[in-house]
Length: 103
Image 1 (cartoon, one colour):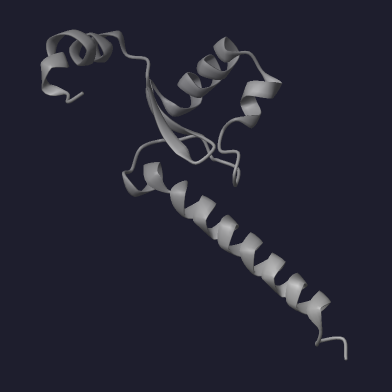
Image 2 (cartoon, one colour):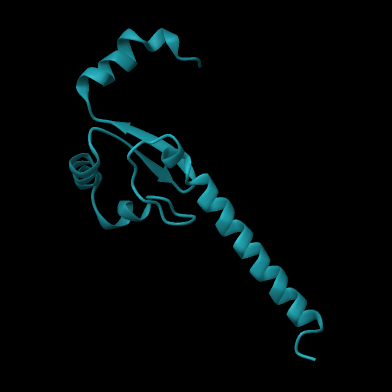
């Protein structure tokens, strides 16, 4: 009697939907791992955004640069972002090789 009826069906649909959303979020947040790039460990759904609330941007960048190196990945929710803090690499990307990147 407990396992029949609309309440149990609604419960199963809700649990299934949440598990599917969690799986999708974790799959989307495997981008940097698959490419062997050092990255900030993300939280499901939030990514690395929790640090935006707990520290200033300067403190975040300094901490991450010290622990992960001058090039590292992070996630804004499920979107991967790359941070490069090497001035030579930045110059190469934004000046020398700029014409090689598509719009």
